[in-house]
Length: 571
Image 1 (cartoon, helix red, strand yellow):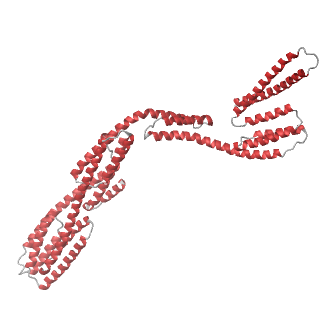
Image 2 (image 1 turned 135 degrees about the vertical axis):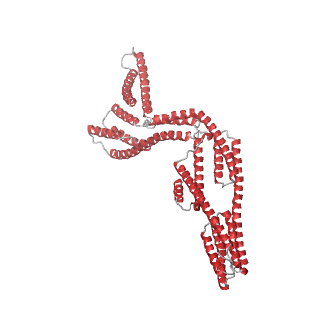
Image 3 (image 1 turned 180 degrees about the vertical axis):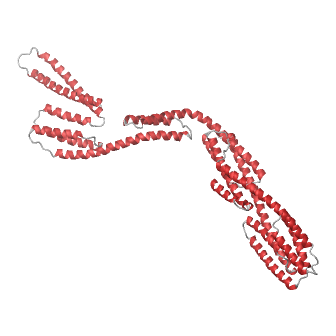
C-alpha cells in the first residue's frame, strides 16, 4: 500500500499547480497515518507479547515511511514557494486593479465624448480581466469598488440607445446563464467542487456589465438567493463536520472509560487475561474506526487512552512473566517425555514399545499444561512421535494381516489337496507323503485367528486318520501324533504358555507313574516267600512293565516339549 502512496505522491509533485492537488495530498497523508498507526499498534503488541515494556517501545520507521515523509516535506516546500509566489503576484495584481479602479473613476466628461470614454472603459476592463487574481480577503472590497466604478460609469453614460440596449440584452443573457449555473451548482453534492466553482461564477458575474434597471433587481435577487443557499449549504456541511467531531469525542471518552475499567479490575488467571485482552483489543479497534475529533481535545484523550493501554499490557507482561517462570519446570518434564517418545518412534518392538508409549501418554496427562503458547507446540511434537510409532505399527500388522489372508487361501488349497490323498499301501511312500504335507503345512506363515482352528483341526484330523491306517505300533503312532501336537502349539498365540502347560502336564503324569511303579515294586516284597506261580504276582509285574513303558514314552515326549521350549527362548 505504501508503495502505491509513494507513486501517487511522486506523480502529484510533478503537477505544475501544486495547490490544486492539496486535497489528494491530504488523502494520502491520512492513509499513510492510518497505515503507520496500524503497523505501530501491531509491532507494539508483538513487543509487549514478547515481554517488552510498552513504555520502552519505539516504532522504527521503514524506508517507505522515510520516503513518504520526504515527499510530504517536498510538497510543503513547493506549496510554500507557490503560495509565496501567488501572494506576490496577488499584491502586484491588487496594485494594478486599484490603479484601474482609480482610472475608471477618473474618466473625463462622458457626456461630451461618450465613445472615447466607453473605449477607455473597455480597455480598462480588459486590463482588469487580464490583471490576474488577488487575495480572497481583498477580493470582495476590491471587486465592490470596481463594480461600483463600472456601474457608476454606465449609469451616467448617455450612449446611443441601440448600443445601450444591445449591451443590456447581452449582459442579461450572460448573467441569466450564470444564475442557471448557480442553480445547478446547488444540486452538486461535492463540497470541494462547490467551493471551487462558486469563485469562478462570482468572477464571471462581476465581469459581465450592467442590465436594464427594471430587470436588474430581479436578476440580482436570483443571484443573491442562489449564493445564500450555497453558502448556507457550505456552512451546514462544516457545522455537521464539527458536530460529528463532538460525537466522535464523546465516543472516544466512552472507550477510554471502558479501557480504564479493564485496568482497574485486573484478572488473576490466564482465561481472565485472554478475555480482557480480547476486550481491550476490541476497544482499540473501535477507537481506530472512530472518526476525527477537535485537535486539542482529541490529542488529550488519545494520550490518556494510550497510557491506559500501556498500563494494561505492562501488567499482563508481569503476570505472564511469573507464569512462564512457574511453567519452566513443566516444560522441562514434557520435553523429557518428548525425547523418550521420539527415541521410541522408530522401534519395531511392537508390544514392548506400545506399553512404553502408553505409559508415556499417561505421564503426559498427569503433567499440567505448560501454557497457552508452549503447550500446543510441545503436544504437537509429542503426538507426532507417538503417531509415527503407532502408524508404523498399524502398517506392519496390516501387512501381516494381508499376508495371513493370503496364507489362509493357500492353506485352504493345501487342505483340499491333502484331504483328497489316499494311502498307497507302501509304508515308506505313505510316510514320505505325510511328511511332505506336514512340512508344507508348517512352511507357511501365520493365518487369521478365525480360520486357524478350523484349518488345523481338519488338517491334523485327516493326518491322524491316515497315520492310524499305517502299519505302525501304538507307541510310535503316539509320538508322531504328539510331534504334530507340538507343531500346532508352537504356532498358536501365547505359544509359550501352551507349551509350558503341556510340558508341566507330561511331567506331572511321569511323576505320578513313577510313584505308581514304586508302590507296585514295594508290593512285590509281600511275595518273597511265595512259591510257584502266583496270578496276583504276575499281574503286579505286568503292571510295572506297562507303567515303565508309559514312563519311557512320557520322558521322550517331555524331552521333545523341552526342545521346543528351549528353541522359543532362544528366538
